[in-house]
Image (cartoon, rainbow, N blue to C red; front, side):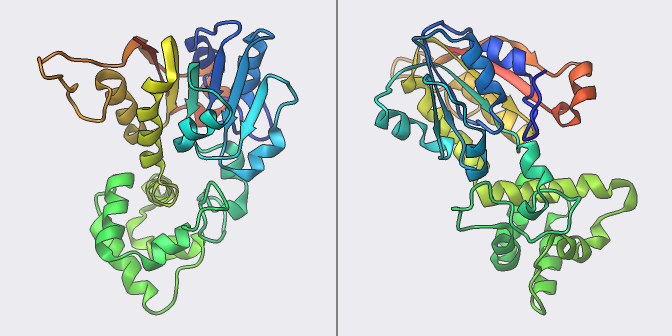
Length: 301
């Protein structure tokens, strides 16, 4: 497995295999990160091929690849169609997405993504984002905060947590990750502390970065952009992401049932290729952050 100091690419071979790369095709890696998946795609591309990559995190630009076939775009993948059109690209042969937070983002204390560090409440994937974790925790209404914790963190006591946060912030703002942990201490039994904290952080992070909205917007653009026979290779890390991917592949939307035309015919843009792919025990041993990864592959009909 290719390893970088920035991020170890998860399901590297399996996800790039899933693209079924055409030698001189056009491909997109919408979550560039450390560039591991992009480098493997380029290794398999011919001289006439092209790879476009997206990453909204300015720090990912340091990992850019010196290759005439490669273009790195410092934007959120929710704008994929707009920016590829700018480069004159209307149809592609494959798109790869790894929706997880990069190891670099988790490991850089000041970004505020990890429960391991004392840091300012940030959690932004791009410094251009005007909303951060501090704003969510200190300015959201009770209803909004409860909904974020319940919907994105699956936290059974979301209502009590939201109430506790609001009661504490009346006296002084909750500024850091340690402050937040202290405020919610009564909800963190020792035997489950790390798990519940991870759920809280996940919920706030998803809200800050509008992650699920971005995934929906991105996926809805892919049918129009994909050549017939082109592939989607999509890696998710929690049930909220995976549910969106699974439903989209099955129905072409985010409804549980596929939409029908006037005559009752079902018209879905993609067909599932193979089953759910998960990391091997060996990969999980080498990279523990791969343990929750789920890969689904689909082909444009």
